[in-house]
Image 1 (cartoon, rainbow, N blue to C red):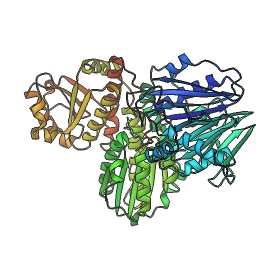
Image 2: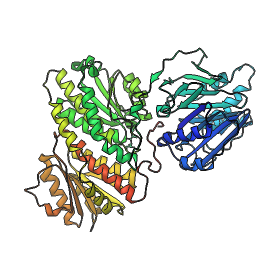
Image 3: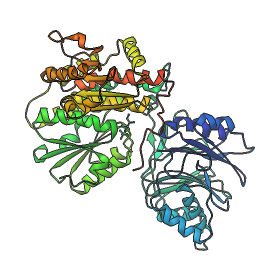
Image 4: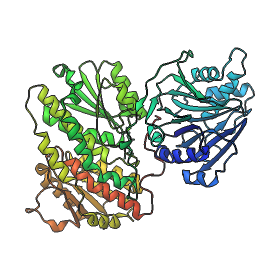
Length: 599
Ligand code: AGP
């Protein structure tokens, strides 16, 4: 959460910072701010809410050539101008922007107060900037960077920092457990939480490692470790094609739903190459006695679908865990475990911590991740990309389908490596590609219109269809703030039926042929109590009473293991259109951010 940016160069600093912050807005949009510097003069501008609010109030500072900026997702203190970054030290010698969470900030604050430091905000960040100022005053601390390193040594938690000193024309930076990248181009310098900011700036960039520090100043880019020993770094090539912006779509969310099909094509192309499996194939699958899948939110739901695929394909038990639970549970994990971590961003704090724990317990860890330069992709023993392309909207759509598809391929690959048979993946993925091709958009818009004024919705399903119900609820909740909840259809009579009343909408997911009659019988129980029913199914309904259903969403049939990937797409579209119909911004749900880099 939170995005930071830094720039030094010849262009209008304010414009560069604001424009780059717009690209990082998906990381948080409670408030934002910039600090620009001209000589010893530092001008800070902040605004509550979206970057557009900041843009409205920013005025240029004459002679400013460098600056830092921040878009915030509040962790410590409410979203307001005072808590917005950048923060200044008490004597205004230092200015800072920060992504991450300082866990021991309270103790440090007390310590600084005892040294007569005063604070204006409720943030953990203001503690960091004052700690730097405190160290910089000590006679043994000769360099600005040394003061920053000394302060960082005291911090427990995560941070990506960009720091200015009033008397210096350098931009300092530090990284621990939050992403940070920088690049140079012909006398210009850029620092950012996401390489997306280098599009149109440079063709390559540097990836900062945990525990790395540095600065840019006087045309020199310097990296070092905590002992101020210079570190050598090779730049990474920027893949500009990955950053195709919104084009003619009104929102990223709908654009990304249309890209589901492309994601499947990319996966098919990438994984048809033997070399893509080279590292993964080195795993001794015979030694694997248990498989765990770990993720958060949508990634967790993809894991539920994946576990069903793995269990059905391999006959092996596969446990699925929410990362924030797994990291504190005593779940059996050892050297015979293959632990699969699913994440779009590869930066989710709980998932990273869970991977670290599994690794320390001796498991083989596999990252199934979209952002290929992310921390999780680097730290896991094995890494398989999901090839969905950049996903900007907070609500994950194409990444969800891509995660399921890659898990499907993983199960097929393990089966083949164990000599247990081949799965005709190519044909099945072609079928899925056809199934996710968007048709009937008007039908979905009408459903969205019907549902937009509901305060709550219920979804019922059995088996793997339940994963689709869970994910549909999550999409509706986050984009339109309707309280949507999923129940196993068989649980209806055990409590939830009490809530059903006249005209209450119950959404039924029933694509599993074997369970169809059972699920539809449960739906009838709700109907008998006055519920309105929306059925999503790929099954033939010839032998059923279709008139029981007020609305039917008929999805194309795929391999039953992949059906949840096909069935979710209509609901992604419906969630999108409900949000639009309610006048909300589906790309930026309130209180959420794309990348959850704090616990
Ligand atoms: C999805 O729509 C959500 N925004 C959220 O649940 C997300 O899937 C979760 O935060 C995990 O993120 P990750 O895939 O980047 O790890």
